[in-house]
Amino acid sequence: MPAVMTHRERVLAALSHQEPDCVPVDLSQAAGDAINAIAYKNLLRYLGMADRPITISNKMAQTAHVDEDVLQRFDVDFRGISVGGPEGWVDKVLPNDSYVDEWGVVRTRPAGGYYYDLTADGSPMAGIDTIAGLDSYPWPDPNDPGRVRGLREKAKKLREETDYAVVLTINSCFFLRCGELRGWENFFSDLAGNIPFTEALMDRYLDVKLGIAARALEEVGDLVDVVVASTDDLGSTNSTIISPRTFRALIKPRMKKTFNFYKERTDAKLILHSDGSVYPFMQDFVEIGVDILNPVQVSAKNMGDTRRLKAEFGDKLTFWGAIDTHRVLPYGTPDDVRAEVRQRIRDLGPGGGYVVCSVHNIQSEVPPENVVAMFDMAREYGQYPLRA
Image (cartoon, rainbow, N blue to C red; front, side, top):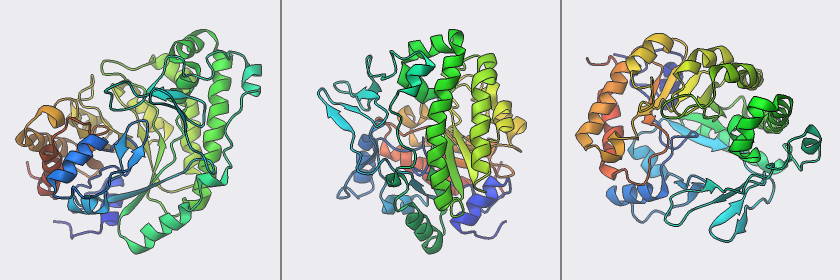
């Protein structure tokens, strides 16, 4: 049995495909594994912490910042930091619970809704389909000092005063965001029939995002253990969003450029968050330089056989997630959740290379007892050597 490790030692062993003392766990310290504010309020009440303030960590997704005492209750192995917005930036508030972000994208929360969606007329580049139009667009400034203000101090504090693995979220995704800028109908048409413009659009956007990444990695690339490099969702529940041919011709080269850019500036392990049925792209992810795949959406086509995923890609990719949020967490019993955790650890844990957390954000309908069951079972069953 491995000796008891610090949180950072445990994480680094697992991410290096070695068996630590136990499987690492995460909650809300990397993009795509947070908890909705309503679910978090219920969890605080269940844990006897109802007096804790609730602040929103991601406005669009309406996820909550998780209190340090909650992280310690679940023995979470990570602590996260992220780049900021431009100096003094505040989203512009519009009527009907809508807002405009720094890119000019408009999102709204429908009556009774839990998060913000792209509005039908919220894509600021809907009328731009020429390279000349891109030249005149007011792109955000990647070098704005607000993006990295205080970042190194936060990273140093975590590095020197705690034993947690430090996660930096930068997120240089471009496929999703260019779809939002143009509007999805326009963007899919561009991918098929206006390819020079589409490539120019993605390159302009990526230039800004990599500019931000360069500043952030210059500040803290030596202090972090994990970096969220991209959250480009490429799958739906039943298929990939785009064809493998289109992906390999237009998206993959730019993703490879992104991951190469990061690897030149940090030794940290790199996360790609990509929802849905992305099995057809997994070998491509390896070739691009992805170290960690999140969220491993087990409810999606070809993603539920986690034993197969581990056999085919477990020596190259770390799997981060895989605890089902489609059925088990919201609608199962605590015993169902424990069985789910046991199966995923049994499938993905051998040899290291697995981090337990939910498939994407824990949503509002998830009972707090199921959240507790997930983390407690991960610690109980996730001790190495793993049991059959």
